[in-house]
Length: 196
Image 1 (cartoon, one colour):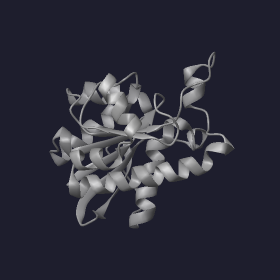
Image 2 (tube, rainbow, N blue to C red):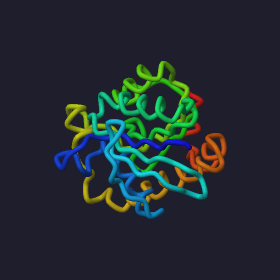
Image 3 (tube, rainbow, N blue to C red):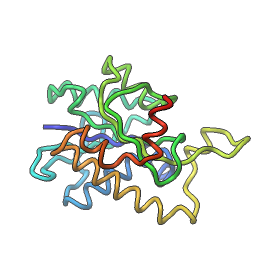
């Protein structure tokens, strides 16, 4: 058993916002593999089944972003999962819209959901797919930016990046983190990692 957890905020008010790109990726996985997010457990909305022959639980935490670690820890404890058996999918304001960055470990990078997961797991050594949602406009409030929605110009790009993140997450189950890093990280992202 492995877990793929997409971060976001529950409720209609937050649907389609930049901060909910993790939720949207989980929905895309469910749609492709015929799974249904129907169970409420681990402080999340869950679907479990097989993806590419691998047993997996897909989760959208219902705790709100800043408390995502409560859900992640509950799942880890119940299934006795190591951190490297839990894939987190979240938004990243430091990446352009349409880009993804996959890492095996790392700091929260200012992301409150990741920060809370690190606190609850006691480690930052878990894989994550960070999906670019673009930087905020100069003078714009960060909260307004991440809780805002993508513009019409970004719709096609978002559809494409959701497919990419979905496929990367599915490939992670069979091929592992190193393989999907090599396959899905874009040249720009590799350049960014050299600078970190």
